[in-house]
Length: 346
Image 1 (cartoon, rainbow, N blue to C red):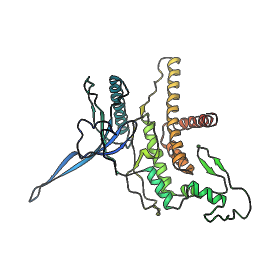
Image 2 (image 1 turned 135 degrees about the horizontal axis):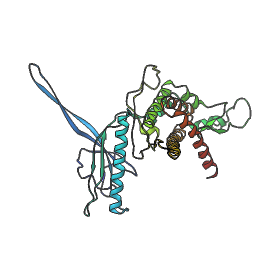
Image 3 (image 1 turned 90 degrees about the vertical axis):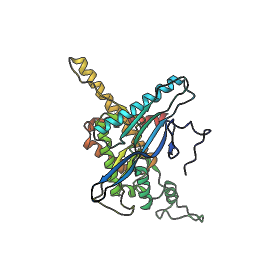
Image 4 (image 1 turned 180 degrees about the vertical axis):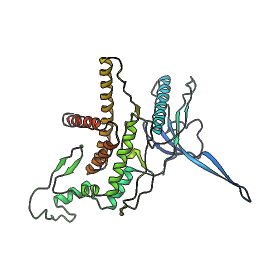
């Protein structure tokens, strides 16, 4: 259950906070409130008797609250600029056909010497589970073993202290190898969990849908900045974990654009200098998109071990729908090399 907010543990409530608001989460950037009755709609039916029904539309309030350790004027400026930038990125994605929450309203109150108000962004409430919860649920239902269990099985150790035969020989346990996308996997002789994820058609379908969704966002020149499987909502109810349905198509929604930014390249007109600037701008855009994908790759490797097949399917779908898929994936290979150098040498 969500703990009851108290003045000692949380900043003051928003100026229009009501008792029926529910605190969903609080992070370093903002607080997320669920408003069960944000909008009300009424419908009437004309017949022998006229009846009307009122339905409420829930919403989410993303509140960026003041920080006491910052100068009040600087704090107010940062809260407003970041909230305004997130709203603009969401609106641009909606115009480009990207599934993301609808912006219902923005509240940016002016700073005064007496009060420094929160900056609030009112968004559409998206029901469903995250892609992370979906993948973890399917792996558990399909009998995928955890990394610790897999290591015990490889080494032939059981609870009663007796050794289990390891392939009929006294050979040492198999070593883990570094995968292409930075994850950790087993060598060619084993890996039960890897086979489970790779051969799950529904998981591959969701990965392809993620690639399509991210490519649409990048086609709008929007960089998310925090792509993880926890920031993608699976809206349509999936089939049971132990079933396979080839006709099921996932409905994915991107959320949490708090670190998002807009990019755009200048078109070269009037000489070689302008053309050179245009090429430099395009290269910078490809770099930012590649880093966006690299962050998602690392999130897969850290959160979903043995998910190399899912990442490969996601990148395949991304390349198919992206306007600049070839250039972005070429730059992604360079970003991977830089990431490996940082891991090796610090």
